[in-house]
Image (cartoon, rainbow, N blue to C red):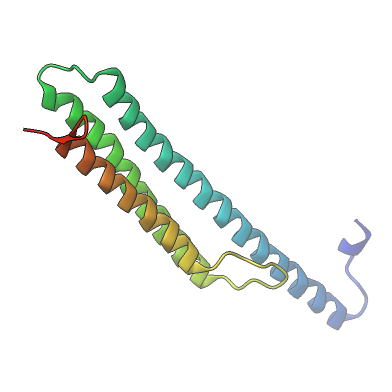
Amino acid sequence: MAQDDPPDDKDKSTEWAEVRTDLAEDRNIMAMERTFAGWMRTAFAAIGIGLAFRAVFGEFQPPWLGKAIATGFIAAGGMLAIGAQKRASETKSRLDSHRLETASTPNFRLFGYGVAFGSALLIAGLWFLNDGNVAE
């Protein structure tokens, strides 16, 4: 590209380098947000696998084994959500946006902890509720 040719003026070259660095930092922020979304999709997939396992293998023998396997997947989804928000928040604190309006760190935390709380409620419901009645 023509703009990649170094200018004769050293000040102009420094200005271009600074602009490119700023834009690279904005791209890193966008990549971090996409990565966070990918980890959250993985967390929801793990929760969904746990629910599907419980639904498909509901009459497992012994009965607690199906619940235990489903609990493992659901708990893994909750832990993935917490880990994803932690990494996204740490990365965001190291980067400064220049021309980009980014999501705020509390939004990452709210979403991550919300998914983890929902998975904990799901696990509690899985173990303590049976057709709307408290299990024996």
